[in-house]
Length: 227
Ligand code: DX5
Ligand code: ZN
Image (cartoon, rainbow, N blue to C red):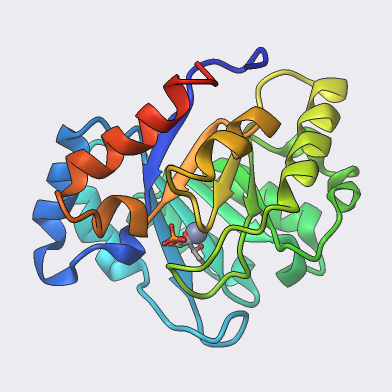
């Protein structure tokens, strides 16, 4: 582990049972989730369509956990304020979706949310160099965005390490989230490389023994070597 402290677990609601969403959120909270990850897809930036601000607003009413909104949408600047008003605590936009990224990040900051950038597998770490001092968090996509249940791209670990080093050069506290294919086999590699927030959908919400078992399994996969 580096100077960043405890590894945080962020269940991704994308994999939840939406007919039981309230209960699933309460289960995640009781099981020790540190934040909730909320995936917004528009059918343009990614091929899939998920949920928007109306559901976020309802989620906000039943949990005190920080809500981490991941915007996989084109022109995300059009919706920052609405997601902030609906209860987001952090908002990540894709670097690949933002021709005026600096301005969009300013907008997130003005909305009083934590400022995040998500980065697709094909995008090099150094594309963040000019805006890294503006960030509270980086979401390193370890799959191509758009779907849950995909396989972790092992080659992303070197990008995580590069970003952790870049952060170390400029400042201390920037979270690195990993998103996609995080399970008991892959979580530890991501943490060793420098990630400190594990986003996991399938591993947590589709665990055969329930949400608590999924979160415990993830944490235990780290304890042996990383904590
Ligand atoms: C994928 C989403 C992820 C997704 C991860 O585009 O950004 O947050 O929920 O799902 P799993 O953990 O199942 O790979
Ligand atoms: Zn996500």
